[in-house]
Image 1 (spheres, rainbow, N blue to C red):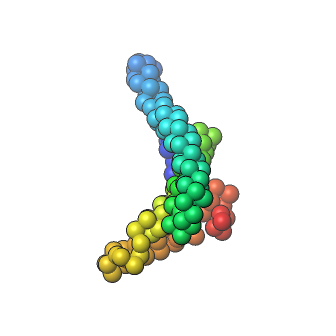
Image 2: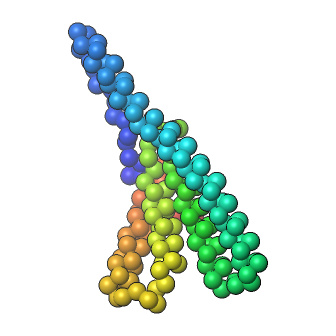
Image 3: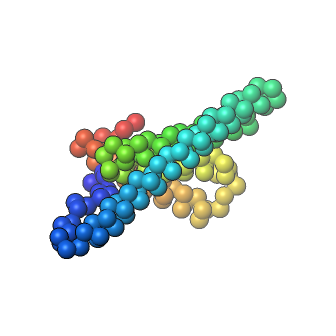
Length: 157
């Protein structure tokens, strides 16, 4: 199952409780309003993230420190990709009223790759490295096993 059902079918409201119908409609709008706010905030964050990536590239070229500069650029670009995937998840929710679990798993995988780049693997202890590998395995298994919206189980990448 790739999509979580966000809204269940509306329950029938007795005729003598019309006020309850208004309450139900109000609370049905709450997720939509929250997702609109999240979409607006993700748009702002994405713009700043792209600016940061461009600035990292410029800093790398000026300082000519390509070894550390490339890691910083990749880090900034992976953050931008994560933001875009989350934004696409919100967009899919607007269209279908479903949350695409596979897209969230891909965002988690991208976040874990960023984590590995930021915290150099050579300086971590064995337990933390095992936990990171286990989490990556779970995320990859989830991406492979969760069916997409069109019913296939092939990875989207």
